[in-house]
Length: 57
Image 1 (cartoon, rainbow, N blue to C red):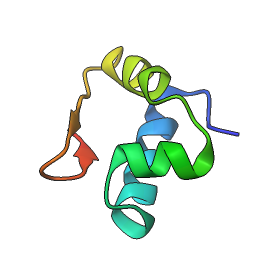
Image 2 (image 1 turned 60 degrees about the vertical axis):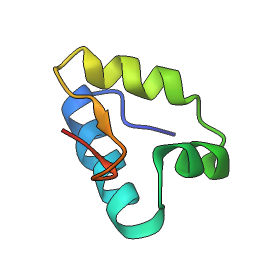
Image 3 (image 1 turned 45 degrees about the vertical axis):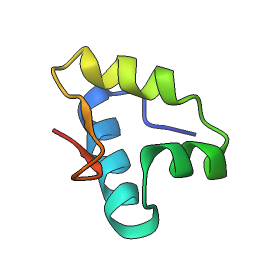
Image 4 (image 1 turned 180 degrees about the horizontal axis):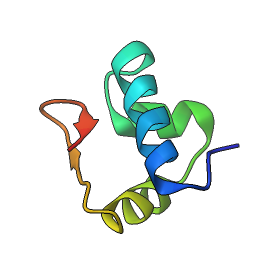
């Protein structure tokens, strides 16, 4: 289960991307998550996924 708080979600997702996955799509597929929901939640606090950096910035 993903953290509900957007700031905690940001930290969680960026840590998973840094440590375990080559892309957001790979993480979502492996963990059976909806990529759009994560992107929308983090966009609400001003963060977007940067594929080149493989993190939300």
